[in-house]
Length: 237
Image (cartoon, rainbow, N blue to C red; front, side, top):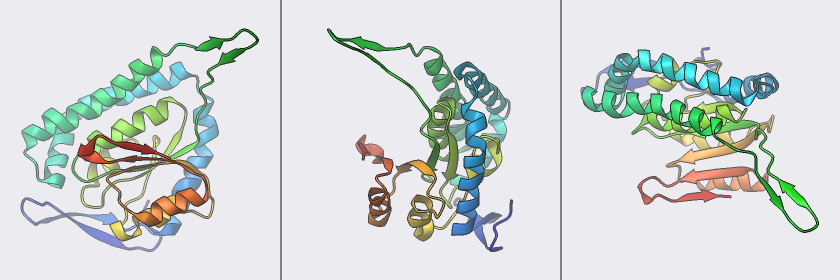
């Protein structure tokens, strides 16, 4: 849907500088609507059995497989990388991410830990609404890496791709899977981690270095994961 404020950003092909499209410069109000939509969908999606959600992940993987050439073309235009690389890495990994987490969920086993006077059971339940903020360099690759496990566990998603490379998130992932908001970097942290509905249960940042985002989540004791890129370090707070 169009942004409520009617504002758009120019999206450029970095290899040529050409403006390839206009993308929504979403406001805080747009983020609120996305969170509300995710909240409305949560009960229905979480009510599916794990096997039903696994089937949906495999359907998405097949749909992406059929569009690998198209995905690679769009990713090449959006990121400036060679189309062969985009097909071999970005498009292929977007498919395998959904397949991997479908297989992983299918092979999960019930766990219990017995003690002399008690038995402890592992219970797996959806967290709720998951906020995903992903970087510019591997747009669909890293987004699907986060979407797939969140979906198969029964969560709904609000995604914020990089405003530099948003096209595959906006156009190549089925909208029924997630809500997508594109914003400028200066607006990213506060509005995505702090909403008046206060419904987002988990925030995942990848390559985000904003103290205000950390502070916003800490004041709500909000579960947060930070990916620190090539340093291979995840901070869970």
